[in-house]
Length: 181
Image (tube, rainbow, N blue to C red; front, side, top):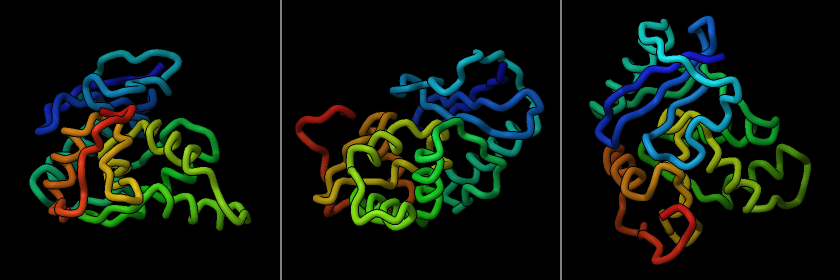
């Protein structure tokens, strides 16, 4: 069992989820997001006022006000495999206002795992299944050619988040086809 609440944001209504103690944040999903709540197997019960929700809402307020809060300000506990956890840690290292490619993440993961290469699809799957959207900044990941693909919250939300952070959008583009459109 997990607790949830909502947060109205400039990119849409967010659902926040925490553990039963209210001390660990396990999810932040955009309304209608692909994989919304999929890591919460026991269900969620609405309960506002949990300590981690107050901290998360403050973090989100600052983020949407153009401040630069970092992920490690919050007690994050996303549910996922060891591989996904490692990818999400790399996402947390992407600086505010910057982007990284799936290939860059694949190189970092390959090095961590002692391999010469890593599947871009495996990286894409881990990034796409990130259960703590915005805070673990999967929106900062783009294709090697500048394609704004691969955001489970939808391309319009990804664009809005990147613009909010002041990312130079001139070399980035919306793909004509793709699974995340």
